[in-house]
Length: 439
Ligand code: GDP
Ligand code: MG
Image 1 (cartoon, protein in one colour):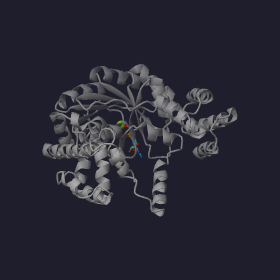
Image 2: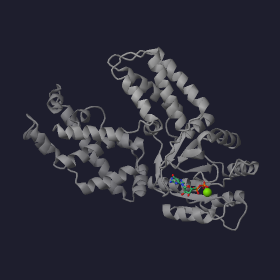
Image 3: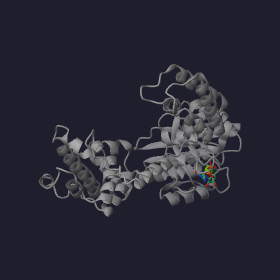
Image 4: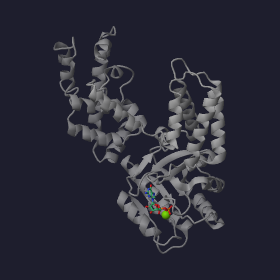
């Protein structure tokens, strides 16, 4: 159980050095956690060997506890195995979904279409499942829920022809998502069919859709699909259940690919882009960071400590991203306008704020809500480097967020203004500012 892994780790809290026995115990607990999460046995052994090797070899850096050190090694080894999320550029492309019946392909097709539409692209779903009764109706309805283009043919029993026609009929769409049939088992017929569809469709990305509860069966499935068509990414479904999706690790390892999406429910909105940190936390049963932060916050309130959300120091360091802006806007909404906040800081009163444009820091709740919707349609790169956003990206973001280019540009202007303002503070120099804002 995760709790015993945590218990074992907590026992190491006071230690600054790991004894071999300690490492043995930690590794044993990690093995248990991973096996319970359905990670395949050989992979667990491989992982625990490298964790053990490193834990014995590497000295914890000064000031780091043995517990934090071993946690860092475990985390790094798992991150190395799962990697980052599968790259999916926001441009025209074709994606083929493969997987067994019931794994969640049709649902995932609609979820992905919804996701791409939200990012401002025009997606279409092409349904080629002629095997399962009701497949056409199900896919069509879900495409309707996602409000995206759809092609299928309920009267045809030729999936390859449907795929061919579908690409033509949905020409106007930018992202083509081709849904396929599955069978109960990996029959030759299914493999032959998907090979043929693959050659007609010539997808940019082939995603293997896996039920989080797949367990040890993931290995064979991944191998067969890898042999047949090649797998560039994995989508894990039904993570809203109790299964932790360790089978995905096996699949990623077998296919030398990465995880693209996580499915967390039955509606088209229940999709998340894969993110290694939270996935691994969940896998190890150490995923209560939210709880932890809430506990810290409560403790802070009880002791009357300052709200720590607003961190002027970090605001004054490095580049100011849109994510930073979002965070600062939220905090300012709680605290009041920045000029009033600044007035409360000794030595920062009056005159200094008069040099700033009046609306540099003015963000109303309503405006913030709109900004959040717009930011949802941006990629991480766009959020991190808003100055690199081109006119065509502005158009895409406007479309995806259901706003218009003026609104998007307004957001970018607001960011520039806040960035300039913060730079002004930074330029005041000598670290006085930093010192003043620290307390
Ligand atoms: P397919 O046969 O591979 O196309 O699988 P479907 O997309 O038809 O999904 C099979 C069943 O799993 C359906 O009842 C879906 O509603 C359900 N399902 C798919 N993804 C998820 C998910 O992420 N969470 C939950 N709870 N159910 C899901
Ligand atoms: Mg289906």
